Length: 229
Figure 1 (cartoon, one colour):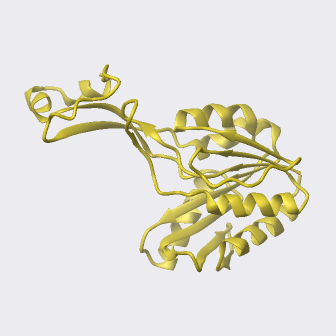
Figure 2 (tube, one colour; figure 1 turned 60 degrees about the vertical axis):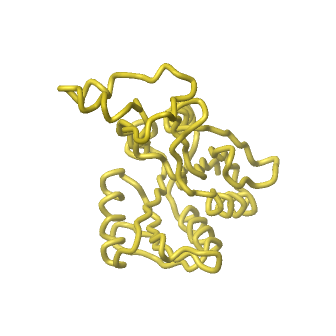
Figure 3 (cartoon, one colour; figure 1 turned 120 degrees about the vertical axis):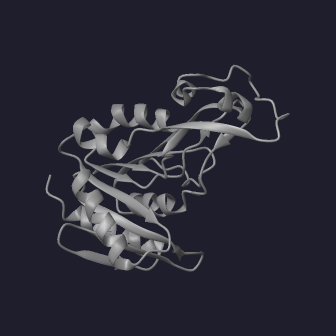
């Protein structure tokens, strides 16, 4: 089976030396990819330069991207060629547009104009004691997947922090419906450490619990085997 996996975390440039990113290591995506290859699947992994990557393998293709726009373009081109997408990448919700001094912002009568401006310096000056960074919302790539390939089986991920189990599962079900996904893997950051990775594989009317990255990968493979193509 041809399976597309995303892993790691995107990085959005402020200038040529600074960026906004997240703490995703890509370790879960690594475990899932390795398990898929071991099970005999053909995998394309879209990841980032800083993410942990599996060893080379004849059934593995790795594509590196930097930011959300890169990911959008790669997935738009690739999704149509795959039967399953496992979208575990931590994608930045916002991208920087313009950084400026507080004085410039206070002098403006129209804050919306800053969303159309761009910094021209390769490295924005650090002489100011404080600066304001304007951000714009990135597209939700998971919501576009079924437009690109209505037949693909979609496994998405939802990460929240310090919430109840019921709330986490409710939010996962909302994402399941909104994005026409088959499964949402719901995680709480407070339940993830070097010894455990508690997650719920949430479907429309049911969910299963995993207690480690390896268990998450094994459950995903079992679910894939039950998909109708």
